[in-house]
Image (cartoon, rainbow over all chains, first blue to last red; front, side, top):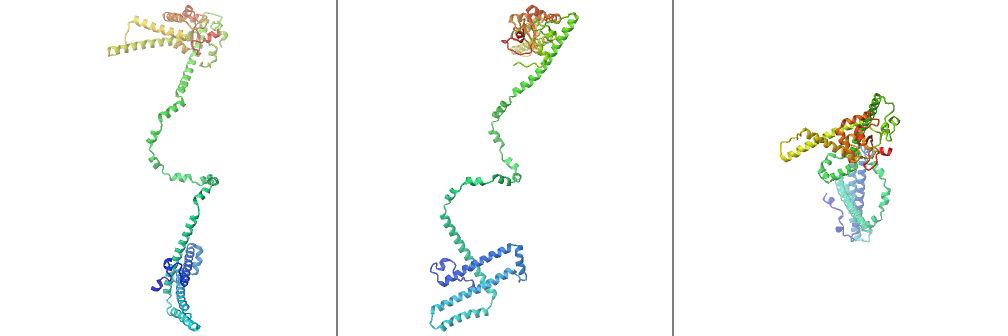
Length: 296
Length: 166
């Protein structure tokens, strides 16, 4: 397993030699990135399938007879094993090709022999030691590394692109070009207000706590109570109200008393006049007119 | 300023000479006012003496002649000032009466004084109202005054309604 855990290609750009990458290393690196991306895509697809619930039930049902560990576990192990085998085969074939390319002896047989020998060797070894679990573990480890490498590369790429875009964009200029008035015009505040549940908001307000925080004394101290009272009294004119009501009562009483006095006056006068056997009325009018002429 | 008169019979009788009952009521009220003024004078004298000589407080007890003289003086002053100023005292204000000369004008101070003295000295003169054809008392005949129904308010420098009507 020690050889399997070794990365096939150094993952960091510095270790990879940057621009001076060998053709074989470049192929390996491209393979790693492609495999990592494919692995990430596979992971995402599996996550989607697992989350989709009922839709994925048929998929799960189709592999219900899978061995313990679940259908996805077996699938993953098998794919990992294939991947591990493929990568190992690719590494060895590339090494062999490199050896062949280095020698380039004219006789084709001489050239073909080592290729056949090299190709036969791993095949034989693979068939002889078909350790599926080992290959699977190696493949999964490789896949994990590849996924990590692809994710790092993608993240770095996205970051660089975003930074470059932001450098190019004049955000202040963009904001200055936004016509806020038009945006506000397009907002339907009535509809917004209609969607607000004021009752629910009011129910969540702890009025006791709010009131407890209010410093009533400070508020009262800021209110000009004497001035306020003076204004109210000016508006009400209490004195006029009292004057009117009391004078109305007094006037009615006095008027009644006066009218009663007038009637009594006439009655007494008539009684006396009758006793004195006077025939004409008294002259009590302003111009000496007869009382009977003006009285009711 | 003048309050409107709502009773039709009262409106008709404005400026007419007042009868016996109204004038007796007015004079009774004035008598009460004079009594209250006299009592107030006594209490005030007691307070002054208390302030000067110290406790205990005692209302002065005047000899009867002095009490009668003082009461008469207060009454004369009260009636004179009322009739000369507006033609009405408190009692006549309540009863809705006004004292004027025969032409409806305001009384002079001298005539008001004579009338006040006569009223206090000879109250029985009021009884003549009962038999007088013009509702005049003895004092009215002697001084040449009349007492009329006058509910209206008008300052002293304005002519009274009775004069206008005359």
